[in-house]
Image 1 (cartoon, rainbow, N blue to C red):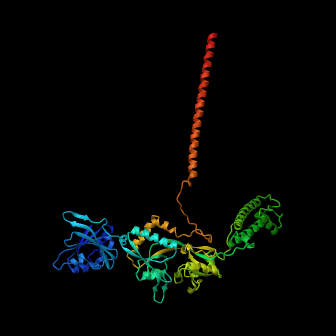
Image 2: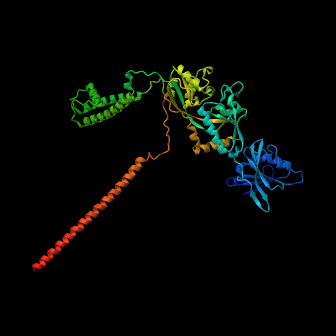
Image 3: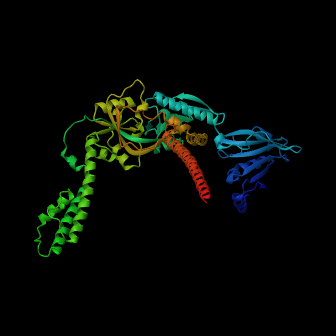
Length: 558
């Protein structure tokens, strides 16, 4: 649908705008012949870009001076197009129709799309008719803020940006980030960032090559890309010294406190019910000794039997049900108790985030300085913020954090692959226990506020993830199996591995074995049938011969 409009106020009727919603590709044709028309388009450019309709602007000659300079060599953004909006423009007698694409509010990018000649009609000059948000990085030079972390992290970001470069067809320039806190720290008095976040805030770089958590203060100063990594939060502590001893409380560990209370209640109800049942059934022979019923129920629970099995059917049913219930409870208790004895577990002061909050013996440190100032929503994370050591005593890097928790009674709040932040020549000074907090955060890269590149970068990150490229790169960051680190509450994530011929060898063996067995059975059946037919033929032949002899003998006698 094509509509030619006059540039007047409220020139878009309500019925017309409503009709554009159901139309697949509406187009507006606008004629401009003076500066006043340019001003009107400037005021109405946002309305013209609604519903994704195509806008064709034709500069035509009028009585006033021509706008040849504005048309052929525009300065800035003459129509004040919104970011990522585009107009098609034809200048007077020029046969080329160009696309004016608003890279941002102050900059236009011009592409030659079509030539328009009366004799030859429309001829495409490019593969694409319109520029999209995903093309904003095409052919651009992006400034990347980087700093050295560790071999694994550096290799991860090298491969990540290489994949993004190939997917988005752009180049990068590395800007080294300097400062004590490379990722950045917040200055509350000046309301500014230092380090990499400071470069983002001042728009000196386009992307910070570092994973950033989605904290509110970061979101106020920068835009974050879609999630790069799904990371579990953990607490690391020094592994306590193992002590061998008999803990009498271990007999109570198979069941919880609530389960023990429920069993005691069931036991009392069972004894009481047996007492009333015997008073009703035994007709004066029973004198109501509760201690006797207590011993009977106790014996049923622990498979001790009864001194004399009753003859009354109600009592028999009662004792049968009690014995079966006691059998199952005793089996569950025995299995749980044996597992407690056979499975070696570290005697830790806490094994979850809730237990750590209640613990008074451990302080908390973190190698993420941003965690000190952030307003977290999770009440448990808010509680552990109060247990943080002073900021001036906080470790400056991961190596210092490990030495701190190995030398003092301090826990480290960090992510689940801490060893990737260490250099290859640095060893963990002591044995550690990693306690998974069963809480997940998503890390992203930071970009300046309202960056024109963020939509394209997000698109290519999602594309790399859907193609499996990002997953392969992420595997380099995962912790390798380290004998110095044991894990508590490790998440059971299903990991898929490529199948090999050995994985289906048993199925193939069953299939081909069954096929071979079937062939052998058919062969033996055929052999048996052939032999049976041969024997039958011989028998019938002999019978026929004997019958012929008998008939001949009878004939001779006659």
